[in-house]
Length: 174
Image 1 (cartoon, rainbow, N blue to C red):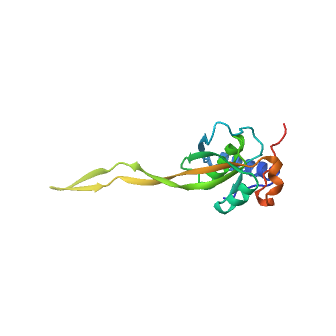
Image 2 (cartoon, one colour):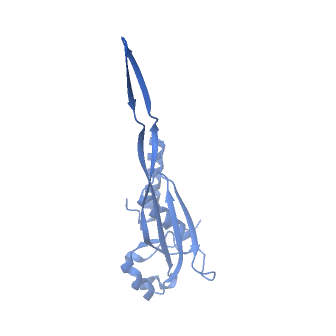
């Protein structure tokens, strides 16, 4: 799921579609995040609408534009979430913390086995004979997305030094 929207109206449309889908299916991916700043002196005011998704290869470009290491966000989701949901939530949360870019450090899935039905034995008597049939328990494997993302900040005055695909949008005015 690609969630790197450059246009706020596209983001609103996607959010409305997600809410409509969740209301129809009765389940939606939820994501929880935890932010850790890399320094007590970094600016934490929001300067971007959401943090731009960047890659390892973009780091030299971001640093040349004045980008600084901002923090780390750890995220995990419920069984209805996927890695796209994680990245989407991290982009919003990073921006709220003052970051302008996020780079995936690691992401994947944690798996858990859940018992669906307990095992049971059924005994049937036919004449003088008894037959016992054992049905083992049934399990399902549930996946939960998790990841760690590094956040960076490029000051708005330096955004013009970035290529267009790495330029954040300013926050909306209420």
